[in-house]
Amino acid sequence: MRIRAAILKEFRKPFSIEEIDIEPKEDEVVVNIKAVGVCGRDLVVWKGGFRNLKPPLILGHEIFGEYEGKPVAVFPAKVGKECLKLSEGKENLCNDYSIIGEKEIGGYSEAITIPKWNLIDLPDMNYEKYAAAACGVATIIHANNLAKLDKGSKVLVTGSNGGVGIHAIQYLSNLYEVYAYVRSEDKAKQLKDLNVIPITSFDFYKNSGKVDAVFEIVGSLTINESMLSLKKEGKLILIGNISGEPINIIRPAFIVMNEISIIGSAAYNKKEYEDAIKTIGEGKIKPFYKSYSLNEINNAYNDIINGKVVGRAVLKI
Image 1 (cartoon, rainbow, N blue to C red):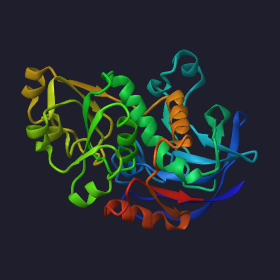
Image 2 (image 1 turned 120 degrees about the vertical axis):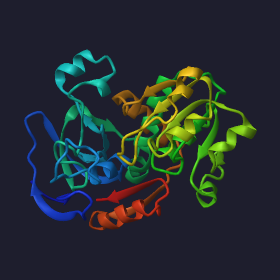
Image 3 (image 1 turned 30 degrees about the vertical axis):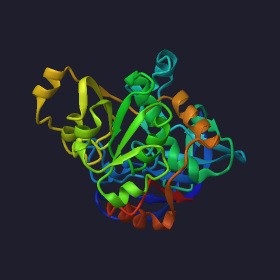
């Protein structure tokens, strides 16, 4: 089967639109892609932030489309059959958990071959809204499950206008008092009517009090400042590191003396992804995104890098 795809041939360079051949293996099916989100992880890969990955690459794991004429989502990772049997809902921790688009062809393409296990039924055919929000909502569902916070807790979310953050704060606002960090007043205005408290300075806690937990989406660029907002015995849930640079803890004594917990949050499992899709389908999350065609992928990356996208960039295929 011959399809068009956007190929990354060199880190930090434009994608090339080319034709390639795909053929399903014995246990795979073909999904015709209708929309795919451009994840923050994709941007880290594009920058060369994962040393084990080498071009050429066809990225994209937030995939939504059609199988046999019906709307489906594709769970964004492949998992070995043996680990699936033993993982007990923790397939995200399997050693052979492989994000789609990193070891094989991903969703920046017209179609993909995938094990049938990865397919999830979609409630409707509004593919773009799911491509915009599903990964972010599933990510925060998983992180919140790990955090084990009391309802009504006070939390801080960094990167709150990004693809994960702007959807995460909506989910969390139904559970907690949410302080949503963004870098400027203009970006803070984008969070209006989302039932959160936008902040542009990490000094907010001096007037508002310290928080029970930080959902750290940005990583190295904000972690040292955001951590200072935590109460004693507070929890920092480390979700992402958008720069791909090493995270250096400047004040380890703060962690020690305040008994701060740092919890790593690794993506999500299939059940959490299904829950995210259900939540979006029920209209409980407002998707934020900007659409591009596959041919406009380089424009999409330029806009993301220059801060011109609120939420997700979504490729319509």
